[in-house]
Amino acid sequence: MVRKLYLCLFFIISVQSKKLPDYLQDLRCSVENDFDACFVKNANKAIPLVARGDPNLNIPKMNPLEIPFMRMISTPTLQLNLTDVKVYGLEKMKVLENKFDWDKSLFAITLKGENITVTGQYSIDGNVLVMPIKGEGPFSVLLDNGVYKVRCVVPTIQKDDGLLYFSLTDIEANYVFKRIVFNFENLFEGNEELGKQTNEFLNENWDLLVSDFGPGIANIIASMIKKVSDGITQVVPIQDFFII
Image (cartoon, rainbow, N blue to C red; front, side):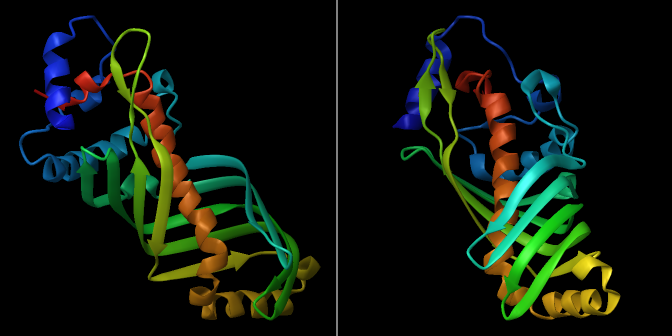
């Protein structure tokens, strides 16, 4: 029913509106012809193009994605803050599957990032599992073969121009990794022996640490999707998203 409504609106609305960028025009899909399969195929073509950034759509450059500050972990037992963060490899992510429930306005997408590396400066204080940890300095985290399942609500809103627009809300992200490799430099005021032991402990127990580090990582992926989506959907009406 919702799909038919969209198609009717495409034909009855004749006012001029902003269009998709030229580099995305040829990647549109038909809502009536295997939309989900088309979306997966064309989204994989679009990712490296969108990752270049587009100031006209307020889409940041994502190769690398730069984040000034992240409160990665904040619990009674552990505080981890990150600054000058750079995320490498997002432009190489692949869409594995996609599902759009038109009637319920639900969108689900599964992405894979084979090697995403996060670097920057860290400040940590507290306990990881049973091990005390304290320090500040450069860090790197390798996310090996991460699979991210993102689900969100995509309601439609009508703006003053009379046109309908998508709006991305209620984003949820789940994740699994083949492994995570940590490297925190200058732990314990530069004590090389303690630093080496701590990094080895983190890497030997990475699977037990996913519950601590995973939400922050998932937030990066969800934030990336939100920024790209908002940059486009806030100015491009629904009628320009599909081939009709």
